[in-house]
Image 1 (tube, rainbow over the protein chains, first blue to last red):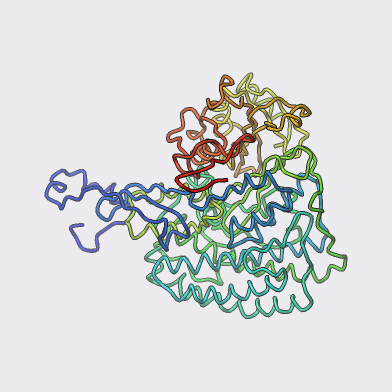
Image 2: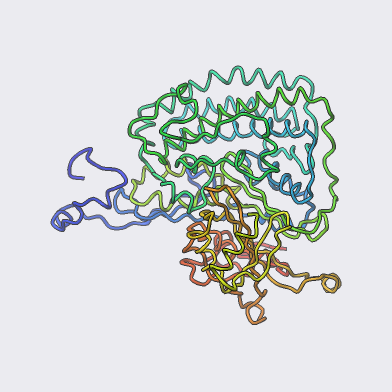
Length: 414
Length: 176
């Protein structure tokens, strides 16, 4: 820290100058200090507590403490029938409740070898992708907030509001929908809904460029995110990371394409490209601002950019789903009865939720009530890598790294 | 993971480790002897084809029926089952391992059953094993930092056990 502006981020601890004992002796000595961040800290995205071991401005260790939102969802699941647990899945990732409903519904359907009607399938794709857009909008807006810019948050919530209005019209709820359920959906879309959805997409499409201007290419934003919190590919896999965190590190994996057949069959016939950097390029990246020169694959900027690409990708999928859904003339079909018995056995299914791969595991002893209901949370695994990412970073970078993981505590603590 | 050829290579690499299997189940699974978990996992991650480089989930299922009337009718003996869901990012294939444990070590209530930790194989197992320890009461030998993760550190009991009883009182808060 002897030359102004000469702080090389992320590598201060490995700085060879520190090996020189004379420098340490005559430098300002700082003591190690434990800094408690959270659980009521605005940039920890819910009730997450981080204990930082710091030396001056440098963080040497981060220890996340979780469990403040633990509601024993899995234990509750052992006392309800499969469909009755759907509202509890809403409250896991409450920013993408539709995708949570879908995950559990598909896991039970896999165990029961049940197939939903074509109309229900396309409606599910439509709803799930809209849910992904709304979740990524929160992720993007809140990330700007973490980094000290307030306006993107307002713009993101303005658009999200319109998606919530659409959801409200379809199922009556704005946050905890329980719309997708075991064996189908609770109701069909009301008349005129598709038109409103198309109108939303038409006015949302040009707005994306504004977001890129506000954040993606913003010089301050790039300075705060590029080269920060670099997550190497092998480490991402080793820690079980998934979703945009994994793809931001350059791993080409998306459960919508690579997952199990009951899930990939849902996207059968849909055209989409996984948002991951291949040969130095993102899919169709000519339409977007170029990758900044200081960005390293696996850093905060890339995780953010993958989410931005997925918003566009999901919009495309919603349009395809609207076409297919409206071409479907067969009825939607009724969901399964609340007390429909499941065959004895177990089934595990991972779906691609906005935050990552959400796995649901259902064990049945032959009744309608699961013997064991398990939720494998993507944010749980994504958060576990935090202490590796924050080793040697500056305190001011901790919110940037936590925000780039886009975690939601309801899902981690369950 | 389909195919018995994979099973053969596992058996030749770790003889005697596979003690059961069901390849016809919805998710085909292999049962591993409780004392061989660590070497089998190490082989699966580093040497098998395909290599299962990602651990997705560890689940403990408590096979115990607290109601004596219903317990007389069940076909299984009370036990604890650990289920490991593995994934190969290269081959996009999944694998399910099951491990049977006694509900209590030496049948002494309160003595946790023990199994080797795989936190040294997959880093993600660190938190997942802490969660299983916290909620289902399994002791993972060799785990770097085995303590409760979701429940408070002074919590008593293992909530996902079938015979768990909710505390009447916790620090002045009524439980029941």
